[in-house]
Each structure stands twice: as C-alpha cells, then as structure tokens.
Image (cartoon, rainbow, N blue to C red; front, side):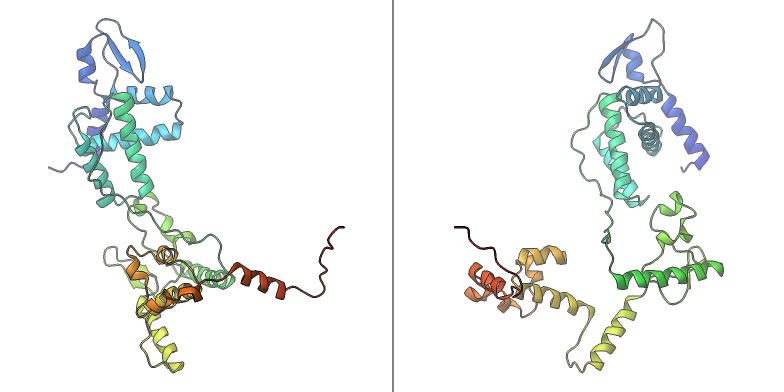
Length: 315
C-alpha cells in the first residue's frame, strides 16, 4: 500500500515523536550521549526527536548539521515505516542508502551525509553501533572540469552564453537537470551554470515534460567533422575520435613517460588497454629510451645565452 506524501510525512513525524520503548522499560535512568540522565518516577522517556537534538547539541554540532541529520533520520524512519529504528539492522541501512543512489538518484556527497546521520543515530542516541555495512550501491561522484580554462575555451563559453541569453528572451533556455536536482533546485534549469558547455544547434522536445530543450552536442556531429577533416587531409586510413586517444598514448610513451602514468591519464583499469595497437615497439627501446643526466647537462650548457656571464670562481 502506497501512502500519500502528506500521510507519509505525518507517519514519519509521529514515529520521531514516539518514546523509545526500550528506554521506558529501563526505568528511571537512561544513558544519552555518554552522560547519565535521571528521571523521576513516572516521568516519560524523552521522545526520539528530543534525544537526537540533545545529542547533537551536547556534541556542539552546528544548527545546519542538526537540520540535515534530523531530515535524514526522518527519511530513514519513513522508508522503513512503521518500524522503530532500534530493531533495524545494517541490512536495513544498506537498503535505504541503496534506495537513495538508485531510486532517488542523489549525489555521492548527499548519500555520505545520510550515512553520517544514521551512524550518529545508532552511536550516540540508540547506543547500538553498526557493524560493517555491506552491499551498498554507491552514488557516482561527478567528474570535475579543470579550474583553469584556456583562452579558446573561454571565448567559446562567451558565445554559448550569448546564445543562452537569446534563448531566454524567446521563452526557451531550459535544460533538463540531472537526477534529483530538479526537485532540489526547481528554478535552476534556466541558470547559466547548468547549461551545456557544447550545446546542440537546435532545440528538441522532452518526451517526459513536453518542454523544448537545447541538449548537448550529439557525438555524431563530432564524428562527421573528424571524418571530413581526414578526407581533406588526404588520409587513407579510417580516423575516429578514438584515434586521438591512441595518438595521445603513443606520443607520451615515445617521450619516455611511464606506462602506468599514461594508464592513469586515460582512465584504463588494465595496462594492456593502454598500449596502442601495434605500439609495443614504443616500450622496447632498450638503452635508447634512457637519457643520461650528462646529456641533459650538455643541452643546458649549449642552450645558454651568450650575453650571460658566469660567476667567476673565488680564489
């Protein structure tokens, strides 16, 4: 049976407000966050919400962290409703974290924050530390672009921004946001920071929303451009985008770079994939591939400018 959003929130809030059953059975004393707290006879046990807040503030967590932890604890209880969090095990935590990555499609940092909140709940509030949590599908970390951009790319971005501003004036300029961001930032689809660096030349309708978007440049456009450049250059061999990766690896190996370094740059798991087709000769150069320190010193002396005087040796 599926609950409505309003009913689900009410259920989660109610579960947070329930008294800890085991704490009521213990009687007058409960240990919360490492310090003894006494209650008089007949005094009810503190609510789970109050215990979480007290634990966070005793350990001097910030208010922002307090809000985030309470949010994820509520989401965890709602996910396993109507169960109280005390009898839940590591497997239940694993299923919740996997749900965040697979169904909710949250970012890796968001999944880590949810995990930290649940570890805090079990360590400092329920006093039931979790063992090893296995089988969690981890959210993927996004690949970051370099912070320093070269001048040609900066000029390209200026042109793309002008195009985006023109789309906004025409009532367009929206871009489909990835995963859960559309719920977290409902107005971000028109912001410049979320637009494609290499957008398509035309708009296309989104089948799910019906909105017209300018998607990213299709890979076939780049493939046709490379094929046309190869024809104009008179190359007989077939040239694809992947040819640049082979050329990149070959030139680095010819310049004496370590094969493991090239493997890391290309993102290969197996070093055999890094070796270009027919490029084993690059690795087997024997002594010719080793440069003597004396050769480097000789090149340095030969490259000195004649106008620079050396320091004379003191007597």
